[in-house]
Length: 284
Ligand SMILES: Cc1cc2nc3c(=O)[nH]c(=O)nc-3n(C[C@H](O)[C@H](O)[C@H](O)COP(=O)(O)OP(=O)(O)OC[C@H]3O[C@@H](n4cnc5c(N)ncnc54)[C@H](O)[C@@H]3O)c2cc1C
Image (cartoon, helix red, strand yellow):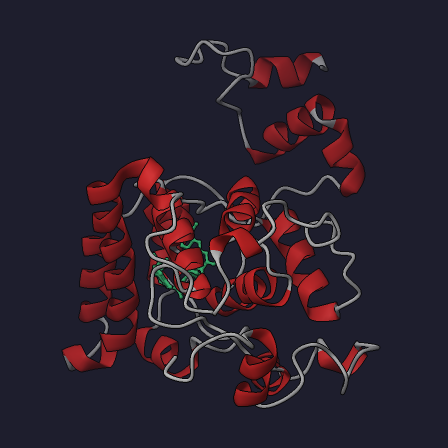
């Protein structure tokens, strides 16, 4: 480590660990990490775009637009807030975000969609408080897919996190997850459904992969959302099709995908469900 960098690090790190926790500025942190983890630097050495700390959290909160959020949140380029790492790590409270959203609208209903999502986070947190860490890693209910839990592979195929499936959408999401520590909610749902339903891999393997990378990684929201997609904490499996992805991404993946028109996501929901869940009862 260069002397300047060593000076930048606060050696009174209260954790007393081998790595310094405080730096003069973000550039000093980047320099330190590049030297300490050259394999990460070789991947391009950039820090994730999300900045830590209360000032950055307040700036992010100031940019929230509840009405635009309500109109566009499902779109991958929609006006989502990017608040989750701050909420996850206690820099912002859910109540604070709710109050800010309500202050920005004339009628409370105009902030409904954003507050609804905050309520999901609160719900997952409350479920976690009831069932604990072991509980969120355990299937809450059987799969409603016609497959038994034992039909699902325990390991994540290496090509999925490596971004080498050949499917432009899935590979792009895997790369974005590793590079930025963030994925839009819809992208998380697309990837989770692909892992569990198209590749028939147990949701636990996918959940563990996400937690390795997400800056907002949280066993409550993460695992229970994976379980919702899988149908072990919900009434039916979540699936999607190419048309849905194309709509919410403005076709940016499909346009350049060599599998366009014959990809695994091609077809109506009924046709995909019949293909993916051939043993599911007619009542499902
Ligand atoms: C498979 C999967 C894994 C997930 N893993 C995590 C995780 O580890 N940590 C995490 O915080 N969220 C997780 N989520 C929920 C959600 O995707 C993220 O909270 C959201 O995408 C974060 O981005 P944002 O702050 O821009 O969200 P916005 O869309 O701007 O939403 C605002 C806030 O509402 C809450 N929120 C939004 N959508 C959800 C949701 N579906 N469930 C619960 N809370 C929500 C979050 O606190 C978020 O910051 C997961 C969802 C899925 C489908």
